[in-house]
Length: 456
Image (cartoon, rainbow, N blue to C red; front, side, top):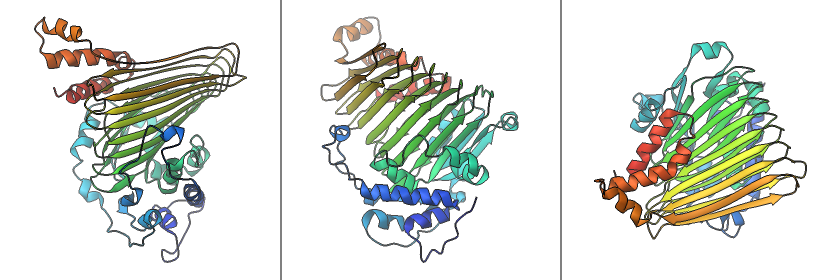
């Protein structure tokens, strides 16, 4: 496996980014291909179906500078804005000798057998139970994985989310600058969660985190990822989940970025024969989030669950676009997304279940429920089905409504103040999803966030 050696005086900004990170040639080639896709793909106009309800008003990509393992690579700005630039002063790990408070807090909330904290592309804390490492479990940052396990990473990286899946995935693959890598060998079970906290400093920085989870036959693992910070910045992540035959993957994606951050995420999971995947996304932060979440059921007996919670306030805008793609017979999928909205917040949910002709005996369910806590909040819900097989069971539905005043009255009549009455009702509404989350620390975190959102 060769690593490119390039002169910084003759390379393009993408090549300079790859060189700073000491990457192999194949990764550089992938970055350059992705950049060509990015340049060729049109910028969203708002007329496309996936963008019709989510406008990028106020977002200027050229304002943000990607970092590279602690070095803000200023020449990358020239790619986005057409202007030149010089490398910015390198950041050093010393500035994270004391972890940012929100990163430290997130790490302390979950009992785990492996911790990974990444801030601005730098790995600032790492641990893994030695007994798991001895059994072949790999849990590390993606940069380290590229250097230490190059064949394994090359085999699976970019195998689920296509380079040109959308404009933002192409940009991600060209400029990705941090990542989480999990590999669990055959018949190994990781009993307790692994957790990664991805923090980003305030300012006009662009974080592009890549998550890659691979399990071999009969393996099982749970990964919790928490995205925090990015005040005034942007994030553009990709998640690839690859459960092997008869294996289990539980993945929890917690987005609690600053309310000034722009967030884009493309996530795809490829299920195989008899594999089980339980996925959860919790969306609480960001100014605007656009999430593409795709689950492919490619093997008989596969089972996938997609769970989501969101609670926007102020003028937050949270958009989730899901696909349940049944490509194999005797597979099941179950989706439940619930949201509470207050102030002038807006949510968009667009869901699509497609059953391919060969996917007989499919069982698919899709539901989106919304609780409106103010008259100025708005929830758009667009579920959809496309069925090309004739022996299936598919259902979908969507609801939106306000808290009936008699519910509030009932609780207040029993000595509960209005604020706590609303909290109990909202928590009860969301409990159906919370109860299905397999990590106790995450359940507690979400209940705390509900109270915070309600000002309690």
